[in-house]
Image (cartoon, rainbow, N blue to C red; front, side):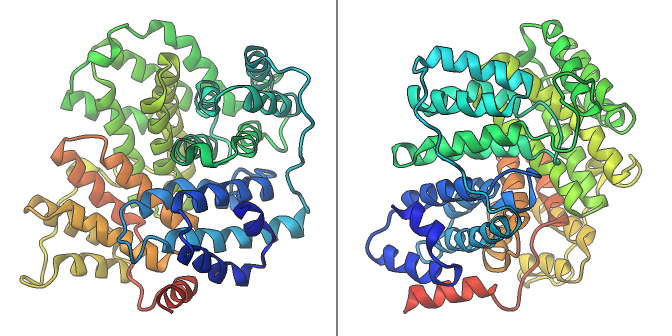
Length: 457
């Protein structure tokens, strides 16, 4: 079984072994599924849903990148991810020695009973009961059935910078992609464990903790959302009003602001655009790890919003994203006067006739990220091809990625950008990605160099 090979083979032997399997007609989807299983069984989402656990959370982005690559490059991201996994597996072994244990066959095999047990355990933050329930559920129901609960739970709190929502979107996307070629049980167990991580805090089920208050307030607001909430209209004045509120109100009050806009007939798509834009402004203002998660968590919540067929889950994803944005504002200390994406002025390209994308991305090498964003906006406003800009940004990630956020951030931007057809909005939002897109590299990362040599050999 490939997952076991990935778990047991030494890190330095993984690239050559995968290339050998590729030449023997290894299916990409099988490699992706095996890596997903190996990572969830070998790396736990404790003490943080982050750090080493990124070897799990990065895989949705790895897959999204792979889908857009040529045949000559399509194996580079998954082999990079396998190498990255081996590094995090070594961290886990050194720090805890943890490996997911096998649970005995459940005495309860009725899927509806298992679902009720899972729902109760998630509500009570009972990790052991939830693990038993999701194991029973995985063995008695279709893998996708659990996500009507897990997608909602993924919106619950911002502990660990939105990684809970990211974990759920990652699991849903990849289980959907890999289908029958993957064992869902370890993936679902790992996802549930991530959702219940409140390490170092009192029991959230019996305490009124600050991270949980927006969730409680927003759940109370759901019955006030009009039935026609998806039939609203766009309004530029409302966009400006919401942006101003997100820079002013608390995380508990921002849900109320969104509720009032829905009651006024403002469309959810309009609200999502403002949420994405505000997150993008944080990254432009402070292009670091904390701000990056404003963008990646917003993308994960929007993923839940669009794939869930449960209306309360969709509504919670929207309201909770609005609550998370002020939390990121406080963490980054961003002010509404720092960056206003809708007022960002294009910067004309200097070298007419030269490759405009080379000029844009060269600004990243000089750490002139705001300048690169403005040049990107000028390029797109003057008829530049957004798909070529995305392809360039993706190329620099594939050849120069050093850690998981290089993949996660870029693909979150591309995915969010693809959800709306408004060309003006898309040009500005995509340009803002220059704040954290990977800069060009003079030579590929060592694992990429090794993989290319093996593939050509």
